[in-house]
Amino acid sequence: MSEFSELFNLSGKNAIVTGGANGIGKATAIMLAKAGANIVIADFKLEDAEKTASEISALGVKAIAVSCNVLKDEDLVNLVETTLKELGGIEILINNAGGGGGGRENPFKISVEDFKRDFDLNVFSAWRLCQLCVPHMKKSGYGSIVITTSMASINKSKNMSGYAASKASVNHMAANLAHDFGPEVRINAVGPGATRTAALETVLTPEIEAKMLSHTPIKRLGTAEDIAGAILYFASPVSEWVSGQTLFVNGGGEQTLD
Ligand SMILES: NC(=O)c1ccc[n+]([C@@H]2O[C@H](COP(=O)([O-])OP(=O)(O)OC[C@H]3O[C@@H](n4cnc5c(N)ncnc54)[C@H](O)[C@@H]3O)[C@@H](O)[C@H]2O)c1
Image (tube, helix red, strand yellow):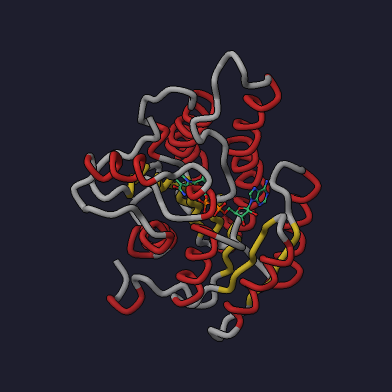
């Protein structure tokens, strides 16, 4: 185990954060930067990504914004090439862009395309970016990948089957890929409970929030920084013997929409 001062030190390491312009991704990018990492914000909202990257540059590390829709293979290839060209290597990958669910997945109304999209967005894009990044991590001798999963991966609710199943796939995919990627590269998943971001605000009502809190021992919803702290743990040397795990960050409870 490293010296205490090195446990959370990411100086000189380069980190890609997908969906890094806003929400959990933005909070994570800022926290990794405060630990010393250079940051690539990969997001399809380029203007937001550029704004976040310039906030991060002000912290004294390198930060760039790359326009990237993780559903497009050419964007993923370009993201990795741009990162290598601009920063010279990749040590940390935060596969955070994702979505779906929100109680909008009635099996008799959801289209086949939307159901498949959950898997393309939450599972396939993360797998493909791992495939593209891991050889470079192995070359550098340090690699940590974190995928943002969800409490939905273990909850059982109505109208969530596509999102929930895709996030459950993420947990088991990470557990299996840990065997493919070791020893140089670790991969873990962080599963947020209800976390105050733009995505949550589209479905939250005061009644739903009150019900969520009745099942939550720490009596508030999550913040993006709560989730970023867990991601920082997995990205850092402090967790050097931890791989293939899913950590739920949820105030100790369970927050569902129904
Ligand atoms: N907020 C919650 O309560 C919650 C709970 C469980 C899991 N999650 C997961 O956390 C992750 C982040 O969610 P959030 O709440 O921060 O969302 P958010 O909407 O606040 O931010 C998501 C960011 O990702 C970007 N993005 C979305 N789709 C993209 C794509 N195809 N390609 C590139 N960028 C894309 C958006 O532009 C945005 O900047 C997601 O994987 C989500 O499933 C969130």
